[in-house]
Length: 469
Image (cartoon, rainbow, N blue to C red; front, side, top):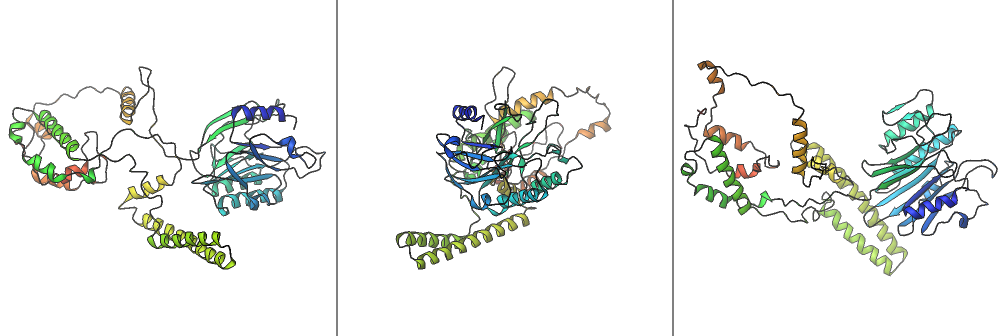
């Protein structure tokens, strides 16, 4: 309470959306006005001891521009110090909890904390869960996934967070006291990676020995839009491409050219035809895809009935209409769970033959997608495209390669046979038929589907090229 003025100034200056406090020392004789901050909704739970003892109590402030509400099932839990609220947005809802576990916490209270975490993560409907707090377990090392021996409570807590697949986002010590070893007592748990970024460890308020932690929590995907135009090879006019290839006099095109010259000529012609007969993907291609394509038409039909029943109940709120709506609502919940389970089982069953579908689904379930970062170039600027980034990395890694001396080639006839390359139309055709059309194009920019669909047109194999039989 003695740090309240400084705390309010810090909050107002930085315009935080969510603020959590542990060890508030608030009790029943402190009214709401003393704790209130303009522009914030406050959720509090006072310490469970008498007004003379120190420690305990938690507070949670949420910006009033965010729609938030108390989570009664978690706040009514018997664990001593925790407060929970739900933030509801247009496309998700987030459970936010602030917990404090005293160093002198009893075994019973420690067990209640584990039950509370299990309820928050597994039993309360939400899109994401974020748990903040001071848990006073200095023996836990999340960086190395280890627990110091001698504390069963710490081991049980660590095992529970691992079982719930919680991600711990604090990497530096959070408590500093003169004469004692600094320790990491405060944690930020999330149920998914990459949701927390820009974690800052600010100076403690007042005479506190705990740092203030500031961070950004990502509500949605912040993947930068790729301005590079992409071609839709699945809608290319391959009939026209084959006709154009057939009309080319390759003997004249390849006349007096070596192998590299022939390849460059062929490559340029193919790229020209690609851009001429392949449409671009629309910018909204990804955004227009169904969010949950695994929901069946039968389930969608029941969902429409449920929505209609809800509208009827709002217009005429009778018990009969309410029961009809609840029946359809419960049916929809069961159907959605069934559809998702069936979809995931099918996805896993087809993993061997269609691994990209599985990995694509897992990527879509992530709120934050991994991306190729922009890196610094030697001239001081930053890369603008994924290709630029790949080139810079390639130059860097190639600079540390060991330069091997060139091998002296023997002039004997036996060694010449080692460098002979046999190319036939049958071998080329066999290689093209094995190309997978769902793969991305390589550095040459020629998509596998393009090469496969161009297969009916055969280029002449020049038997006079040196080194080719």
